[in-house]
Length: 301
Image (cartoon, rainbow, N blue to C red):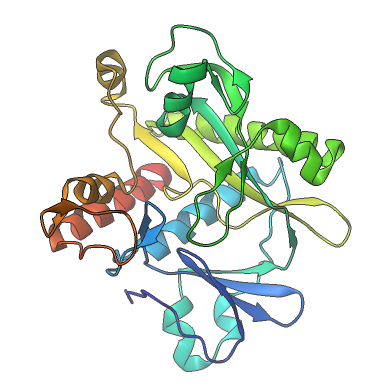
């Protein structure tokens, strides 16, 4: 397995480097998306890669795209990523890339929450609502919501935090018809995926989807889908105990890294969550890699 912190494909023009993905132009109408092994926490990219992470994210996304086809078209072209790079670049793209259609991205993160967690739990405690969606009294941390809610965010520039926005703001950005389609499609995908994941002993607490429009104006699911980077996965074991205790359930994501960063001191002071990030110890890297591997194995095994 090749570990890739930052890909270097010389045979194609680089379009952009995101927190995890490097995107290259393939002609006018396609993009090669390479999932690196980079990890970002608190919107800062760590200096050390997590071995295997990019391959795991790509395999999980492909697994889900295959199952969600009836609900929404996706951006996959079906062409082999290896077919568009030079021979010596093939190891950088194998198992970790998708060759996708070039779409007009919609500047809204479509977030769906089925459980109260993270920033949603914080907001609920203050206002009994999340992103303007009112919720009943008496919910606790990690509570299952009466029904999944759509809580969109505005896509931020690199290094900035995405900002939660109201549904009304989505209507202003994309118009009422498309806003409604995005909300309904996102909730339908989440509900289907959550049911599938439960059969594998996993809870999807929340997730975010990205959509684009093709030339015909069709809504298309793009980027990655339902990976531990874009979704909060909890194993069913341990959920009830965490709920009863009011604590965060154990999760399949970068929580190890976040917890270590929160506890770590630089020159006697907590890290201020700005670059450069502290160097991750080998043990934290390995534990995080193992969590990602376990998520893929449980889901697809």
